[in-house]
Length: 125
Image 1 (cartoon, helix red, strand yellow):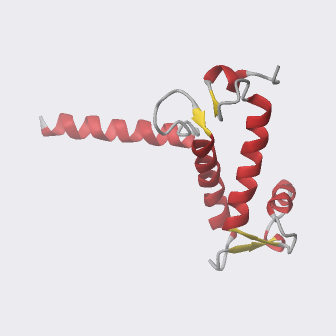
Image 2: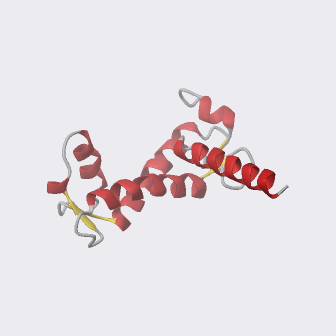
């Protein structure tokens, strides 16, 4: 019996990790819609891993010199005060602005959340 329970828990955990890896964790309360706060938290979480990897000396800052390629253009837009250094606060501000733009385009009923139907919309009506 214990082996079966352990197996079920392990499989459940792996499925959860798989959903997390695919980014399917935005709807944290399971209500079927993505709230602004849920989208911001998911966005910050995605960038946090990248930020930590780029922050080689772990000082909480990433310089533009540490970033190259396509990531550089994203980094430049995240550098809110244009000092060539990106902080975690600037990342959160960048994510928040991006989410607000997305909501402005896709949130048809202006309730501050994206339903499954709204997320599928190519353009706002």
